Length: 89
Image 1 (cartoon, rainbow, N blue to C red):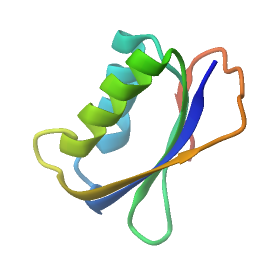
Image 2: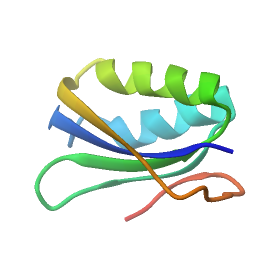
Image 3: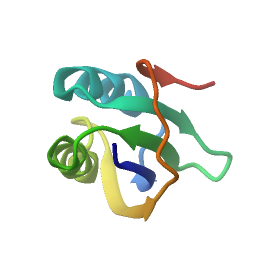
């Protein structure tokens, strides 16, 4: 199952990005995790079908209502099976 690493840049902290990202992941059926970075970005690793990952990436480019995403850097990641999608602290 494909797995990708995402680095989401812009105004993405303090706008419920992680919580909403988890909700969207659950709706799409992708698994993995999401967390804030010390640099003020959001980082995620997502696993699922390529179509569902593509839908998730498209959502990440917009984010929740109060976010202002400037870039989403997508990098292939070692295939990793996850049981669920979680928020890392």
